[in-house]
Length: 126
Image (cartoon, rainbow, N blue to C red; front, side, top):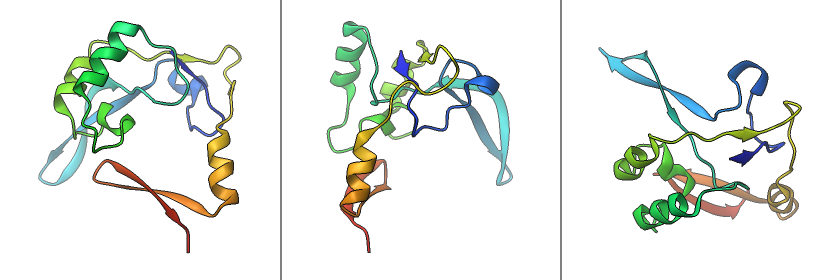
């Protein structure tokens, strides 16, 4: 279960309480929907079953952003493992229940997050 964060673009009203993404394929270079979804997990504040969290941790590649490994195609073994689970977004009134203070801290210090090859890097903004 993840807490609905003010900084996330989760449309609970339209997409429901389960955090998932549509799966797409390519046909002659054109992106087409496959009418399947897969779960998206987040490292933002969440409550996880201990056995699930420990197994995910064992499968993590320490050189990559942990969250991106759940759904970015860089850790197929982990994606396969989590495919059998779902991530419920806790949002009793369909609106955010928490706020990420780290984003504000980064903005105050002119630091930006850059993601390259599923790896997060924080650098001074120009």
